[in-house]
Image 1: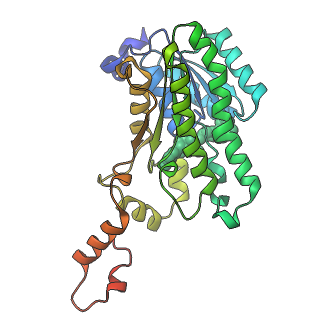
Image 2 (image 1 turned 135 degrees about the horizontal axis):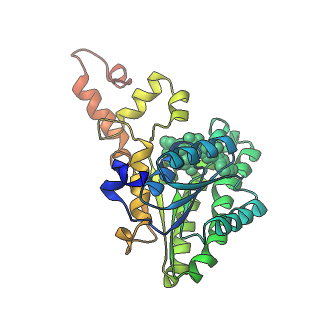
Image 3 (image 1 turned 30 degrees about the vertical axis):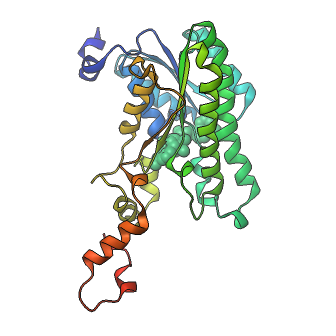
Length: 293
Ligand SMILES: NC(=O)c1ccc[n+]([C@@H]2O[C@H](COP(=O)([O-])OP(=O)(O)OC[C@H]3O[C@@H](n4cnc5c(N)ncnc54)[C@H](O)[C@@H]3O)[C@@H](O)[C@H]2O)c1
């Protein structure tokens, strides 16, 4: 079987043998990395994405690695479409054991401004995808998980849901609400052996993000990570796979940051320290406080 020839699978195979997973927003970036990670460990994956061709490309990659996947084009904000997604998953594979609520309204973030400048349509659309979409998927997954004796859910939150920002008002509020939705789910269905955790990535360099950030912004963002490299989708996928697996059997209701240490320090102090260290004699404090990378 080609499966045995795959080096990645041989290293850590089996954690998801016999399991069925739904990963939303799995056509690109972090979601795609999660779908690949689950499939590489034997899980059968429903790759759900609003972009059908991106979903197909992901399933083609999984098939090329001898994994099992099904592509579905779906907007997770649509209740009927989400119901159809779980029906199709069950008919094609079997009831869903694992759910990764990863799809997020990232395309709206450039228009997601400060509170007084915010277009309410952006707020509504962000909440519809990030929060309502996550709720809809959880509601479809939970009954089947209860019937099968348990399951595991990971909700893709963000560091933005744990700290204030000058913009991204809707995005941050939606992610903070996702953290509490995860805790509520863990509280309400833990007795049925359903675990639910939120993962809060910091800066993760997906292809899409890389294309959007100029060199100045990339340097600026890197400066506030404690580790000397940017985050990769595979970093997040490894954490998601751990939380979905039995290795995390006693972990539920948590928000787990994966941010290269971004939230572990106070930027004001760190910038002050850097400026002091880099200040040539005679330079004013104001000049020294301008970004140095
Ligand atoms: N990249 C980062 O730095 C970062 C940081 C923190 C959190 N996140 C979160 O991680 C998740 C994935 O982000 P990414 O950077 O990989 O994004 P991405 O834009 O690379 O991929 C997101 C995928 O979700 C799909 N999608 C968008 N809306 C959808 C909808 N309504 N229904 C179904 N699919 C939909 C898109 O088509 C796309 O394939 C998001 O929830 C995002 O908020 C990302």
